Image (cartoon, helix red, strand yellow):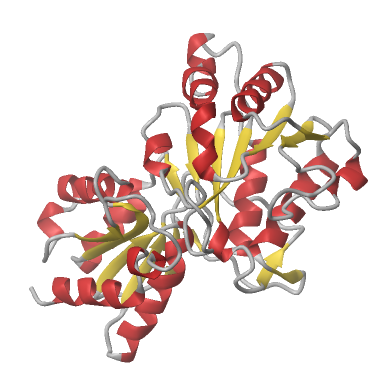
Amino acid sequence: MAELQTHSAHAVPMNLLEAVNRALARAMAEDDSVVLLGEDIGTNGGVFRATEGLKQQFGFRRVMDTPLAENLIAGLAVGMASQGLKPVAEIQFMGFIYAALEQILSHAARLRNRTRGRLSCPLVIRAPYGGGIHAPEHHSESTEALFAHIPGLRVVMPSSPARAHGLLLAAIQCPDPVIFLEPKRLYRLKRLPVVADGDPLPLDTCFTLRTGDDLTLISWGAAIHETLGAADQLAAEGINAEVIDVACLNPLDRDTLVASVSRTGRAVIVHEAPGHGGMGAEIAATLANQALLHLRAPVERVTGYDCPMPYFQLEPHYLPDEERIVAAAKRTLAY
């Protein structure tokens, strides 16, 4: 378990997008083997401007524009990683990543096992995910469970500027492939303190954002925003909710989740992805297996619906909101 990063005299206010850019710049400055590649990431700085200014700072040999070809981007990244580089590849939207699945699932995830440890695959694939920005079809996907299902892949989903910065630094240093999913509706939501010269944050661990004794709210990525809002509403009614940011979905820090729910006796899991087959189901199964005798109520899940993300007029009805989370929390407290 990791605690929320504390404020520091060296902290600089950044939004999540700026934190990603700063982490990339720092990683490239500290390690010449770090290279960036993706569609329009060089001259234009990417569709969201996450890599803005990096080509000018580090040159076109380390910040490479690619054709509109996700399979090529992922395959090139695997080749680079196997030969001593540390590529950070950008997929413009998570909904475009499926063309790259062959390279990611069949090669990046298996390279260490296939070579019996002779080769590793230290690459990061960044992709903005999720709804909330009124984007068209295929631009609002949230299919993290697909990647978390694959042995050999780390799946990381930050929920704040500080965690985006610290976890991206750690992902770039990781010797294995990391799918780094960035919640685009949080990109410019607010500026929060980030220790730009601080240590990388640990992978494979949950972050406890607030403590409480009455129930545990579990979430990750963009949905943390609504989860914290729901916790504030519950606190106003005298209900103290512990809030845990899972942050790394594979490997999953089961110990922190089980310890929290064993103490509070109640759990509500919140995620934007559809409920069926989602990571919430895996976490609920873990709690049923390892914390059953401590549970005072059934585990609740508040998720997206089992349908494609709708167009922008219906997005607010699809995304989990504070009202649905509070209602689920109160159902658990009724037992």
